[in-house]
Length: 149
Length: 406
Image 1: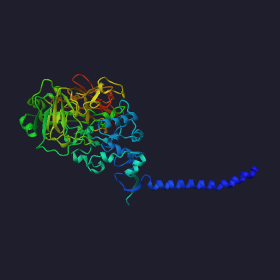
Image 2: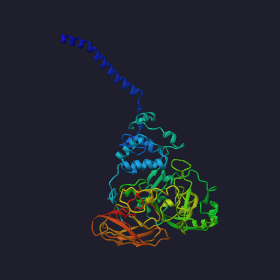
Image 3: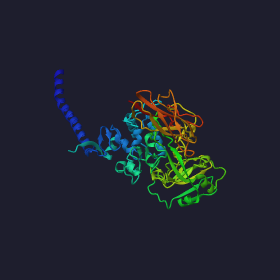
Image 4: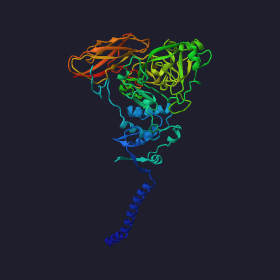
């Protein structure tokens, strides 16, 4: 009796599972379609070699900044007022980058960055961390040449 | 065949939905501002600089020399460093240019045309050392933010103009004058017309020195635009930021001038020395006055390969802010022993002094020639970095070049 009852249940529920699975699959497909159609507009743009927006050897040519996640947020927020060179030359830790942002907001007219502050600081700390220089670094990048006097 | 590279480019709208960027970019971008990449500017031709000069920043423009470029006794324009806090004035009209002297401590405000200044007062020419307060910043550890100057933010050109003291005497000062502050025509980076990019100054005693000039010529020519045409305040021996370019006004103050970049950590160092990296509050910071003793080996260029047995002629310049350099030494053994170099007297007070020496090497090998100047008070340049400060000013550590005897 009990066993018979279970059999009937199985027969009744099987198509229901199929429908649920179908619905779930269609959700995934529709979701993917929706992201493709209405999601962030990512387009492959063909750039001539040497185009300022191109990335070469991991460097964004126009700004010289390291190509890494959130580069665009840095370009947008940081290079409107000053040169990217100011970023590249300055190597700092998280606290100092945040202090620099606060200083720019207090004195230089930088807008509130909202959630982007963390995004930007993470990019900077990861790509432009401080180097240990000590009290006097060794002479490097010496270009040797013959001196005839 | 032309190679093409592909990058993923996001539209601004797409970007904002991904990152949540507040789209203030468009609204705050100054009108008429062309992104740097599209300005198509060659700073070397624009400013008539040698191509071996090093660009540190293009907005605002900052450029420094390399040691071997500074070999001339009098620095020509092509090797003179560029330091800007703001944007160079776009249009400058000599005919309508005026200089206004105001402030709490003048008896009455007075405005002069360029013609007035050039005709009513006696002209003087001095060779004056101008060094950026942050020259050498790149070596500090922990690092200090700002343009990472190495050694090339120093120059010593001939400046011609009138004495500031003659002008201030003509205006008439009250007894309570303690400081002067300059105002200029450069624009703040934000292009906000109500903000001055920089407005610094000097105590009245420095303002009244013979060598403190309101200059209209550099090396016998009108001052190049990037260096302050048509009028520049020149305070030799002090941080070059006190030598205001594109001068339009001078305020004679009854207190320490409180213009832009006079407070906070700008051109100020801890009044009491601190450990590297320590936080220093604003009230513990003191304004930099005279620059410290320093020197540069300007010949030969670092990296010379020299045949064994040959003597090497070296030369360079030494300066000490308000003071004179009393002694110049060099070492080829990392300071184990020092030899005295020939040292010239300065052309005038506040001009750098040239030095020279003939160096011999005991045997083949890698050498560094270190140069060390001593000022008239007996203070020497340190071989390692001097006291750390939050903005990385006043690095006067010994300069050195590499030489190999082969």
